[in-house]
Amino acid sequence: MTGPTTEFWQARFESKQTGWDRGAPSAQLLAWLDKGQLQPCRIAVPGCGNGWEVVELARRGFDVTGLDYTPAAVEGARANCELAGVTARIEQADVLSYTPEQPVDAVYEQTCLCAIHPDNWLRYAAQLASWVRPGGTLFALFMQMPRPAATQEGLIEGPPYHCDINAMRVLFPESSWVWPKPPYDQVLHPKLPVGHELALQLVRR
Image (cartoon, rainbow, N blue to C red; front, side, top):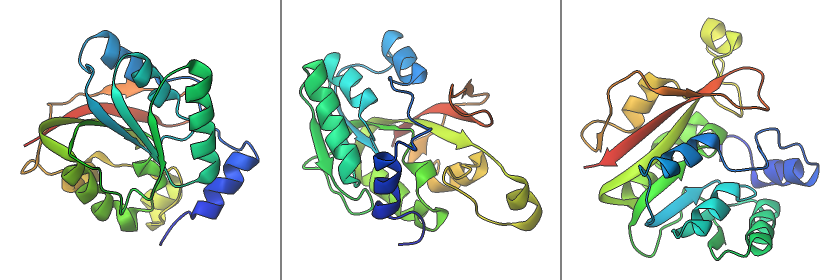
């Protein structure tokens, strides 16, 4: 597979080189929850890492499945769920081939797409479309991190890969997803000095 391998991510977790990890659930997830925009349902969290969002969702009554293909991430997520005293499914799986037992009501996508090489984005987007039931919602945070070598020379650099909003519209087309009108909320990351995420809710047609 093009891009970072399981071994790459395993080494990052083992060496604690996890700068994307807030050590707590995303502020945007908490905002969606507190505003009632995301309510208890069957939800999947691909690329769940140490599972902070999984823990928060389980604590609030969601039927949640966290997915990661890195053994160290799965171990960390399970440990954090146990420590918090919550119940959630944490599965070691490749999101490019994983199939849920039944369609989910929602997907929380934050750290997975930007960690997958763009060569695999179409496949991943097709996977998400197959997971979410009609009328269900993709709660997405699209990483905005353009780099000079990309804009000037056309190089693909990452992870995290830049999730250009035009590319996102190709991946999640209006024929399959209802898009909200911009502007979209900008979400800063406390551990990333540059870049931000755009927060959107896409409804499956």
